[in-house]
Length: 156
Image 1 (cartoon, rainbow, N blue to C red):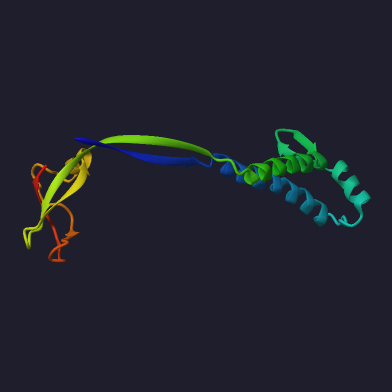
Image 2 (image 1 turned 90 degrees about the vertical axis):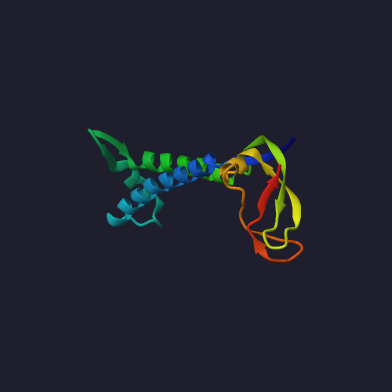
């Protein structure tokens, strides 16, 4: 009974998802604060008027908690920068698993020309096909007659 080893590589991209969330959550308050300034008639070209507007007008989040709009913009900028940094990172966490399974050498027989050949199957694969009761496998092309057939398992 031969043993085969298969490598499974799993990559995790949770930092990329977290980066997207932080970037979007950081841009949202910046857009809301600038939209509030624009609707009140403050010109973005007049930086001193925009600066005075951001310091003078509070932003209420409920329960009596208020922040000046400048703090909302600073928090949004910090969240956006951290989110972009997480998106720009090239490092991904990669987990490598090695699966060891028992391989069996199985003799198959073409149902048309009776040609026999050998293939390797794992025990779990044979069990999932219902091997002891079901002695035929999925379609294979016979090398001799060239037909697609469901070969029989003759011996293990």
